[in-house]
Amino acid sequence: MAESRSDMMQRLAANTRVGYSFDREFYCDDAVFEADMDQVISRKWTMAGHVGQVPNKGDFFVFKIGDEQIIIIRENATSIRAFYNVCRHRGSLVCSATSGNAPKLVCPYHAWTYGLDGALLSARLMPDDFDKTANGLIPCHVREYFGFIFINMTDGTPDDFDATFGDMAAILDYHGFADAKVAHKASYPTAANWKLVVENFLECYHCQPAHPEFCSMHPPEALVAVGAGPSSGPTDAVEAYMPVLEAWERRVAAMGRPVGNIDDTPDSTHLRLVMQRTIRDGYQSETADGTAASSLMGKRTEFDGGRMHLAFSPISHVVACNDFAILFQFTPRTATLTDVDISWIVGAKAENPDVAKMVWAWDVTTVQDRQITEDNQAGIQSKHYIPGRYSDQERGVVNFQSWYLNQFGLQRAD
Image (cartoon, rainbow, N blue to C red; front, side, top):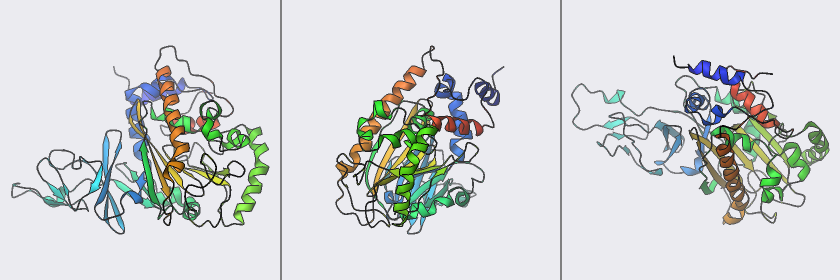
């Protein structure tokens, strides 16, 4: 008798110890990946992109996640729509291009034509009793928030968006994301399970050996204490860094910057985080020489020597300097493939930003992350892999894994 999904997940959770990495199946098994998509990924609000990608009526892009493709399209000046990229005739892709502009959406197979609101406008030679009104594109939950476009693939009612993210409004408004412009985009497809990509991003234990360029821009004590979020480092390191952080917070609060962190617990719906902290002394931005690559973003009037890491969920992150911000999308595709897409955005008034300068840090860091994460995946696929114990600088990973199991109503063994 085949093992049920529930029995499989209960078995895996029972074999998982707090403070140790997951068993091999969590990172390699197709059945676990299907459970992840159904129980975790599809039920969360996921950042699909930024409004800067669809500035004009009819602009669209296709967001691929798991086996699904979502058409994100601007209907008009105030409305962005999302539809599953599935023709209602025989299921062909309506949009074969990854982005573009279309006054109407026309399926290339049999020319069924849809409006920007998803309604079926024409279908040739159909029987007299065919109901066009019942054959529009299938909508996907979508929400635009301070310039970020989110989708939610649940078939039912999704988590209340405003209740989930409302406390981030002041921070998002201050940084000027709503009217920002996309300066550059790059893709780093990674041959690793999405949980490995997330776990790597939620710890800075690897920063010193793997990321010399990244480390060069930051105080060593900050990287140890809160390099990957408020709960990522050892308690004693956090306590030692607190006086520096608190002094910086007092200074920037007087400049009008909203301060404070968010550190969701494993029983939260989305495991959000906000970590605001200092960068290297004397640096304006996360660039090779510390000088700005663009003009100030948002409501700033001067450089304040800080940066922000915000996570809407474990797969949707934003890192904001004073002059530009970086959007990170870790999109699960298969059990051992994750799309890692990065967008660099600048303020609405930015003119001639130095794209090469702003891209440098996270391009080289993400290439390094791709290599170490793919090596991690390859090692885990060995039959000799044994779950290993986490360091005190990997508390964020422990928090993520507890949250992940909670999505299935499971707990780890003590």
